[in-house]
Amino acid sequence: MTRTRRALSATHLALATLALATTGGFAQAQDVNLARNLAATCANCHGTNGNARGDMKPLAGVSADKIVAMLADYKNGNQPATIMHQISKGYTDEQIKLIASFFAAQKPAK
Picture 1 (cartoon, rainbow, N blue to C red):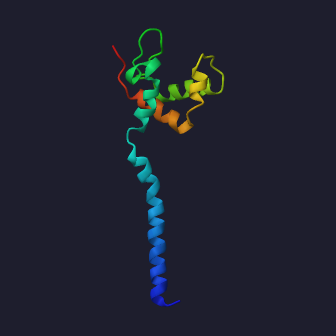
Picture 2: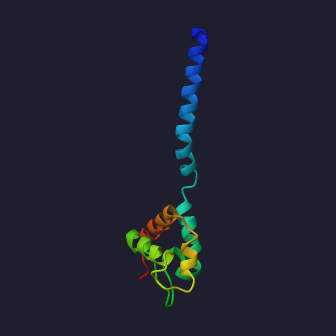
Picture 3: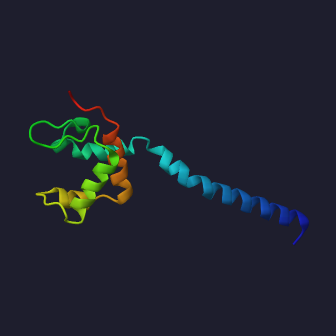
């Protein structure tokens, strides 16, 4: 292999490595509204932005850790529920953290 070919191969390898290294961050950065979009699935019961009406638990302003813990209890069956045990199993742990952080950042209704 000539010196020029080795240099080109090294350059191509470096560019390919750089492309792979930055792809993950790019994919995550594309959907800046992912937490909001995931949390929107809760609106039917818990209200827009977590401000529930009636007897439903409001989620707006509740700490993310508390929401994560509540969903974990539903997910593993430690908390009885009519539907939350099924819904919570549909989310990954990372998605649950995103949902919880979204609701924690919302202002509770007065």
